Image (cartoon, rainbow, N blue to C red; front, side, top):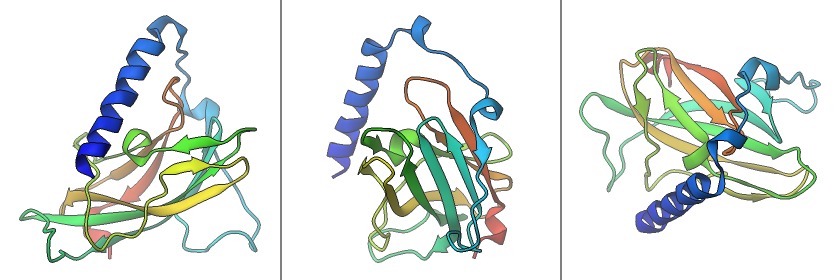
Length: 176
């Protein structure tokens, strides 16, 4: 599975570099393209952290929690497994593909970036095709230091343009 994901990432990055010359991309500030979406009480979950829109996507971060070590998977000393539960909603007029590996990144207050990881007890991720006006909900896992502060989830809404928004996740010590 890891080989498939690595191959997918390499092919995707190759396509982006070869198929998209730099002079055709437009950089847009996140404040120009992202708005916090206010939903009526019936459709929102009180435990949701934040819902943002950027480009053709709406991303809701429902919760952040820890995941205990598994039989096969163990966090390094001083680290925890942090699960971010998200829903990716497609606002475009056509099906779009959502990729947590390419579109979601976690950083901390010091600028350290944490890679997505895998765990045998992790629920299904939101990756894959999302129909017009459709949603895909799932869990994404990161291994972070237990004392990391200012954790943020960066959502890159477009692989071709700079359409990024940031959701504050808090400090690792406060995650339950």
